[in-house]
Image 1 (cartoon, rainbow, N blue to C red):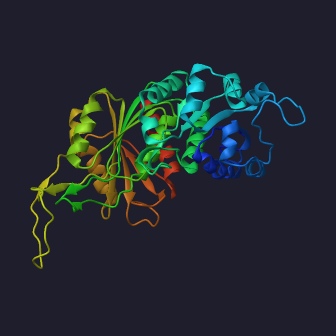
Image 2 (image 1 turned 90 degrees about the vertical axis):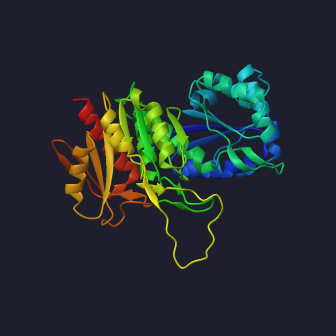
Image 3 (image 1 turned 30 degrees about the vertical axis):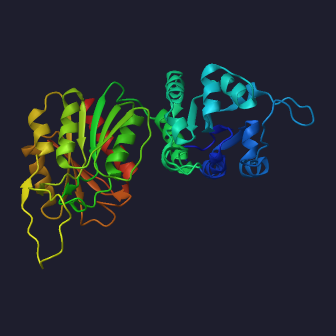
Length: 401
């Protein structure tokens, strides 16, 4: 386990999202981490020390001195930790952190920390959008801290918008990815990698579209792995529920093939590696109905026109880029994949098969074959994260020869 033996120090500040830390502690400990919790005095209004200490299996501290007069040494806490997380981080605590207002145990420990610091902000919509909050988050990033962005949804005030603390699962995954990244060889440092992921949706009318079953999981796994290896990643995703948080990843979300085409060629000229894993629709309706099409007849005819071939254009425009395509086939699989490799001027192609159980769309696993111009490698059924590792290993073998 990646978090096995890792020492994680959590500083809780006084916000309603503090109750979620119970779930985070449980998740981190299940993954093998050791967790120590500190609280600001106001955080005690939202979550109990007893609950936190029971889950973490350690005493929880909120003041410089315990009731028996024992000094709670903030320096020792700071030096103990492999990583410090401030969650939830209120606007008040954030302001104190970046301006050195050291008036509680959490801030004193933070200011003594030599380990990486992660911040999960949580506050109401207007507070999160306030210029001072934005400036303070930028300052925290300038200090080298990693921000786990607040999510959008219903807030304690009843407003809907951005400000909710990231879910415990997201925070745990971000921490896990950080340690995983730190253990990776950084062979892609200095490289820029462009990745397309997910499906595209081609509108028929305001409520209907032509699409496919791609979830985007494979592309997001590749993006995470590339970032972990030190690359700067530009991820262009069609409609997908997948989320990703990494300081090396810049994500752009699009809907249609034309939108994806435009985004790809905004960046393609300046990238070193391009990996086209998106399942782009080949055709789109010639005309999009302005109103919802009524169900009047037994049949409906829609005229389709061909979408721009993003991968073919990438191959035509290829200069220094190492270009990787994907093929999903149901018949003549290897022959079709090899043909696509040649016709589209690719350096490598990844073949998926819908015939293989557990492979392809929506699954958490995949089974692939990788073709270059000189060889073929076949892999067993693996998780998509492991498949991403295999793909990046093959790319590195080619570009680092």
